[in-house]
Image (cartoon, rainbow, N blue to C red):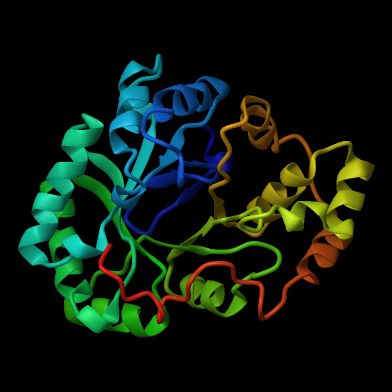
Length: 280
């Protein structure tokens, strides 16, 4: 994959800038959907233990006519598995379900600070990276206060933080914090979350019509031009292909400014990190 379609991580590895998300994809449907995504050209697949579809994703990866080394596979640890010793077992469970020897990226899914296990979990991830069981390590839904503790106790800066991010919830403060600490920002729910209201937003549809692109392609391109890693998800075969076809056009400065103006304080659709304390 050309470097123009990847971003360098702070550990020396590179991550594809456009990935395929599989949240809410049933395990039995994963082999067909993920397999089609790989055939379409996706090389970055993002799953999680909590999605309950690692076995199906792994089957698609193993059956793909693409060498394992050309694929970038991410999973995330269940919050109930957090802890030093339990994290080693948790990763082995993911590798077994996926049928893989290593992960390209393993994330702590939520900090769940009320249970106070995320720092020892991070120490385990640092060790797993040293062992080669994972290539890169990072977090999801973390705030600067959580990072301060991780970095302060281990000296190891996460490679990525995966957060809800889309034009209606742009998280500029956390993105600036990431940039200052060489942490890559990954966008989940990049098309605006449930209901697809963002894709009916007049600003987005107007730009899409002018460029002869779909609203989703416009929003994905907005993420890419913000130097974000973007993880759209869809089970629709046509959209699987369309969402990947975003490298042949560019949004103008005016287009970017119009989309930037859609940001709003109440745009978040999923729980805030400080509110999620469930061990799922």
